[in-house]
Image (cartoon, rainbow, N blue to C red):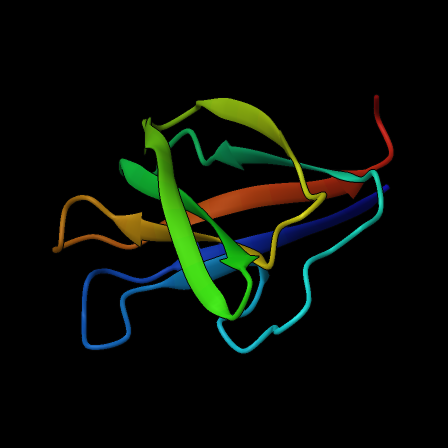
Length: 103
């Protein structure tokens, strides 16, 4: 298991903060690993989105809006990234992440 913490900055010109992956990744991840993320209990609401490739076209889908203390697990398979955007443009927030092989 690999654990790390990400600071999601308030909305700006560069509003996407990647929890895993990158906007420049051009190959989908093929292993059966999982990303578990938890919004800090003193954090702000965040919108989390998954990115993947459909041929050469980058697509994304909003997973939802997560509140302080919320935890969720997603498979990394076939993804190129997961990013967060602050819902409230006046506050930053922290997300604790772990990548594991949980099934």
